[in-house]
Image 1 (cartoon, rainbow, N blue to C red):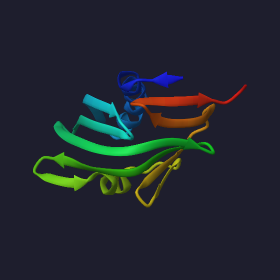
Image 2 (cartoon, rainbow, N blue to C red):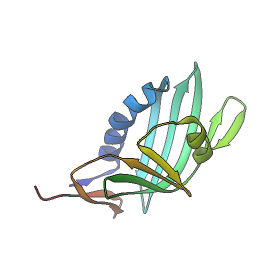
Image 3 (cartoon, rainbow, N blue to C red):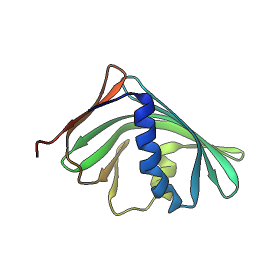
Length: 129
């Protein structure tokens, strides 16, 4: 299965919204572009204020972990600018999520054999059933 940027954005939107609701957040705008990595910009509402998030990362899937690799980015909230990964580490508490180096490993059992970004598309190779 091959997804372009718009299709990957739709999947991300639907996948992350329930997670954000747990933290009383809502996505107002989401921009996603695929190059050799994901480029993400989002405006997320929290406590009646907007957080502007911009960042990059690579994405893969291995051994029942969705892996966001080499995360870089910032979060602008009110009058402060914070490191994206540091904020995620301090704020998100989920038993399925492991922070290691500049990576996030999210444990989720999906029928995916390989997940890579190539030719400005997200290429998902599914397991044989």
